[in-house]
Length: 435
Image 1 (cartoon, rainbow, N blue to C red):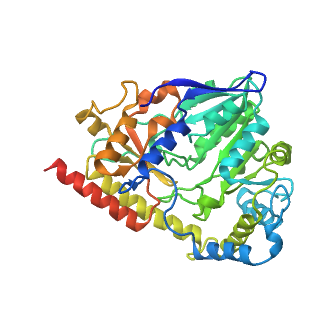
Image 2: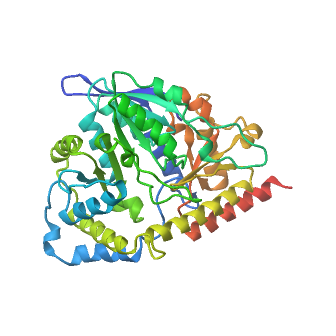
Image 3: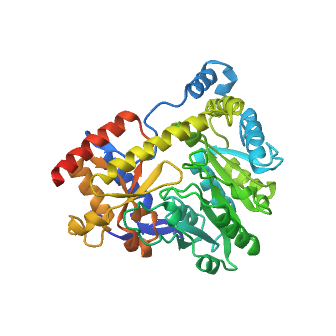
């Protein structure tokens, strides 16, 4: 049973290493992923594609394994040179920068590793890090592990419009509130666009607001852009590093797993100015040293393929975006059939759906009295309806969870067979509700 408490990690001399509410967001996320993995549960909670990567990426990995035998050995610590070169070339054009593959690129163990390295490299004891809620679950503990202090600012949803689905574009930052979070102790702001779990794509105007405040207060922006190729309905992803004055204070993080539908490869990267990357290099060199060579070689070859097709109908980024939007629309229609109200996402793997109507009908679900409602609802839905999801309250700081405990997160980047299985579960649920 979920109970709030405090977990503390202690150093060898007894000093406090880390203290955070327990179970942490990550611990609870793992709990729901485990529940969703049981037999006959349609897992719409965990964020991974349950279909193969594109053929050219699979072939690239096969080439890496069966080709040059030296790919079984160490490579350059900060990235396999063919990969750092193509990352510098590919993203340099998009960001409008001359990117040096040795000084401005670091290859990491997934975007997760990139985030951890960035926090360890730049956040010192007592530094403040601004985190926009709802947030990807690792941002808070990674800030704490570096000795920093998370400072939260929430996106505010607009009032619901009768008869229309809400959009994540209606969830906005309050400019005055955001500005108030910057102090002399602010070291960094983390920006996730397109965002997880909301699916929000920050507009140019919103990015300009963030950029202005970061420049005014000399703050680093950690830009988590792993879903940048999955943007829907004609919206455009804008990298904050491409805005005037921002390259020199931004770390842009990407993921081969999200880019090529191969999350198990665990290849990520950070792009940024040498004055910041040199500190990440130090952490990387003295922790994991370098990432698996063959996976990096496969990602390099995959980017070479995409570069030849980029912007054309044959582009994987174009085809994957179109297929994901179709899956998104399918899932939204199906969820509405049982009284759920999906919030239309502009990007990412995810959407969140409002469960207020069902909360009003089933207010007393089993669980601890202080357990957020969405957490109890997901457990009920897994047990009684065979559908797995993630409660959105785990993506909020403790003081704000009670205000956002009527949403659940759904991953819609799934195989057609999974969506059909979902439809069967939802149809049965609908039949049980009656006319």
